[in-house]
Length: 200
Image (tube, rainbow, N blue to C red):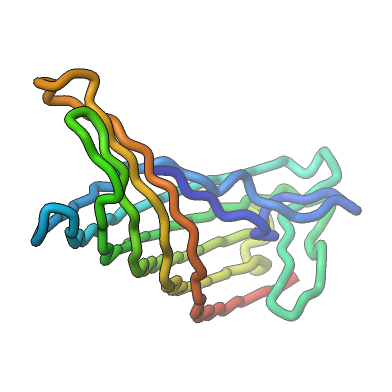
């Protein structure tokens, strides 16, 4: 699975150009486990869970000859701070853990020897915890710099409904293919904590 985070205003900058890092995105294995219990010929309940860990580290430098330095949009909302002629360096470390689960009721609407269609009704929960650490400074002026720490915890949860189809290419085939589509409404609860030590 893949995940990305945008709109982090931290990194090297030039005057009149928004401060941005490189792309914070990663692809990681996301193991999933599902258990399904069929209690009548047409009714079943399934429980599914998954988890993934993402991590990105980046380091940027310049020698000051391009008229740019390190920059940051501090928590107070000011913009493009830094020196334009001093060699600068920026290092970032971003981690994200994502876990989710579904409790789903399934009812068979139609089936034959090769295919079937199920109606779905379920409840979904998703948690994401992000940690973003960044440091920017001027190697030639160690006393000036910036240390940023951010933590974000986000919870998404809500009901959904949908359909699922599956079919086999032949009667004795051990392989099957399926398509699942669902629509729902998710509620969101999030907590963000940030701290910054900034010396321009």
